Amino acid sequence: MQKLRIGLIGAGRFGRLHVKVLQQIPGAEVAALADINSGALYSAAAECHLAPEACYSDPLELIRRSDLDAVDIVSDEKSHGALVLSALRHGKHVIVEKPLSVSFAEAQEIEQAAAAAGKQVMVGNISRFSQPYFTIKRAIDSGQLGRIAAIRSKRDFSRSWFQGFGNRIHPVYESGVHELDLMLWYAGARCVKVSAFESSISGYTYPDLFSALLYFENGIMGSLNSSWMIPKGAPQNLVETLELDGTIDAHIEVVGEAATAQYQLAHQGLAIITGTGMQYPETTLWPAGLTGIGGAIQAELEHFVQSISRNAASPVMPLSHSVHGIEIADAIVESARTQKVIHLGEKEGAPNVYS
Ligand SMILES: NC(=O)c1ccc[n+]([C@@H]2O[C@H](COP(=O)([O-])OP(=O)(O)OC[C@H]3O[C@@H](n4cnc5c(N)ncnc54)[C@H](O)[C@@H]3O)[C@@H](O)[C@H]2O)c1
Image (cartoon, rainbow, N blue to C red; front, side, top):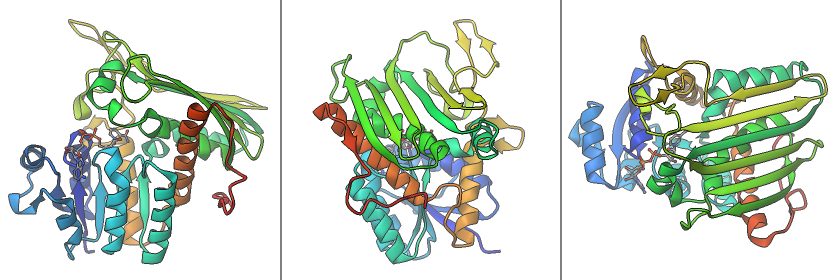
């Protein structure tokens, strides 16, 4: 079987992890790497054993290479939309890290361009590939929870991460899209009303705190809270493969008529008491296992490679769901700005992503 030849754009923290996982997958080959920062580019190439000839400081040069089947976009959030469109114009399949784009208009343009080009675009909404989140989805689909009434979710990040990288985009497109994607997946319906508030405690360009209420067309109510205010000293839970000094504190609860399902990502029961504090190593997303990097990132990238080898849209992560996620994200920003309820269902031509 011929290997899927992939060019990867963005040689930062997460791009390096993607390269290493793709290199583990028998059906894939990372044939090119691009980053506008040549320091990041060549140090990642050395770390991942890629030849300097495979490196590009202009991502468009990589995209133009005719011997690549697919492009994996792991660059800064604001660059995603234009890079996805460019890759589609050059006949490539795409996997793009979240968010798909930072505007609904651009997300729709991508959906149209993908259909016109006959190419697949999959967004790396990693939680769908994480076993605990998938177990909740299965419990919903099997009817174990009964009729779903509400979905409550929270995703908080360390304050130091906001200073380091969070403040490059409104947090709804960074931390929020993870939870929005889960809520859409669990609700199984379009979101039709959004009401949101936000606050900027640290005084940066973007708010470091927001809350949103969502109403889905099947009557499910959703609430989402996200802050980037976890203080220094909180237990570290990103260690080993993506070491970041700080904490992801995420929690989701699905309330059904028959039963409730809950998952707490921050502390799964594993603790390491270091000489200076506590670590709660996260072991579902990208753990270092006996045979390499495992967990959700491995399942997600392997699923992408398999889907593209069959030239089939992903049944797990359809593009239309990600487009609707960005529509909701835009509405959260708009509602917080105008202090009004935003009605999504009333938009003319709004597609029913679940029909
Ligand atoms: N799924 C997850 O849980 C998860 C976790 C971490 C990061 N991410 C996502 O991965 C992406 C990258 O995040 P990161 O933490 O690696 O950031 P990072 O800042 O470490 O790396 C981003 C890299 O992209 C490069 N870059 C920026 N614009 C570019 C462009 N136009 N063309 C080529 N390269 C460009 C930068 O020079 C930098 O090296 C983001 O979209 C982020 O949201 C997802």
